[in-house]
Length: 342
Image (tube, rainbow, N blue to C red; front, side, top):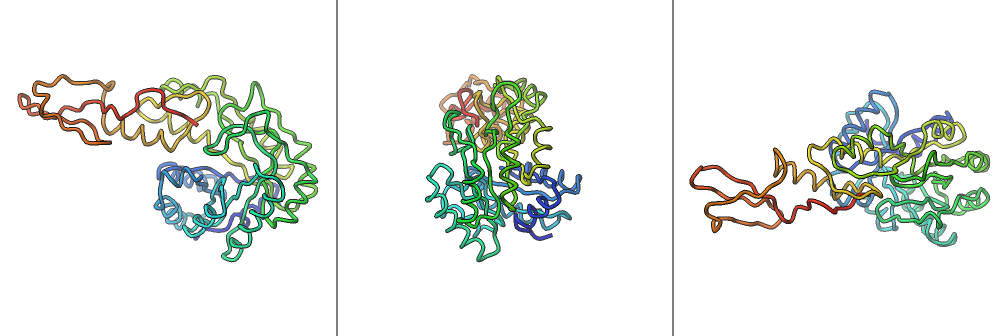
C-alpha cells in the first residue's frame, strides 16, 4: 500500500494505547528486515532515516523504502529523524517522506517554537506530519551530542505551551532515556510519573527516543566479532511496555539495529566503545568483505613490484606473471583500527 503519514499511524496508537516502532535504516538489507518483521507481526511501522543515513544511502534509499512499502500489507510511514533545519525537512518532503522531525531542542523555547511552526506550515500543506522535541536527551546520535550534565527532562507545563504554540503533531519527550549504547550503569531510570503528567495535558502522541534495549547477547556477539562496547546498557523492555500504557506511542530504535548488523558482518568492524556509527562502518565492512574474502588482510610479496597499480579507494591489485593469478593487497586507505562507532 502507499505510504501513510506518521500521524495516521500514531494517532491510532495513542488512542489504542499501543506502541509503534520507528526503526532507523541505512541500506536495503536493514529496510527489508524492518518491513519483513512488521509484516510477520502484522504491525504498522515507521521506517526512519537520519540525515547521516540519507547522506550514506543517497536519494535512492527513500525511493527504495517507498517501493518496498507498495508491496506491504501493513501501514508504513517514512520519517526523517532529527532534522536539523528547515531546509533538511524540506528536502525530505521533496524526496517523499511522510513524516519529518525538526529538532531544535538545543535552542531556547521561542526559537524552537518559531522553527517548528515554519516546518509545520510547509509540511501540513502537502499532507506531511511533524515531530518536535522539547527537553534534551543525553548521549550521542550523529550530530546530536548532549553531555549527561546538560540533559534536561521535559517539563509538563512547557510541553503543553510548546505544542499549543508550534502546532506540531507529536512530541519527543526527555524522560530519562538517552541516545547510544551507553545509557548509564545498571537499569536506566525512566520517569514514568513525568510521562503520565505530560500525557494528561496533551492529546498528541508522545515519542520515546533512545529506547534501544542493547541486549546482552547482541553486545556479546558484537564484541566477539571485534567490536568494543564495554559497559553497554539499554532500556528495559518492561519500562518500554509501561511507558506505552502511559501515553508513549512512537518508540525509536537505532542502536540495536546497528549493533546487530555489525556483529553479523563477516569481517571485524572498527572500534570505539562509546557508540556505533553505522553509515561509515557499513561502507568499511562492505569494502573489506569485497577485498578480503578469506583470512586476515595481509600484504603479498610480489616478484615484479613495478607492475603494481594503485587506484584511489580501490584495492591494490597486482598480476603475478609466474602464476597467472591475481593477488590482492590490503589497501592502506582501508582502516584496520581506530575507526569510530556511534
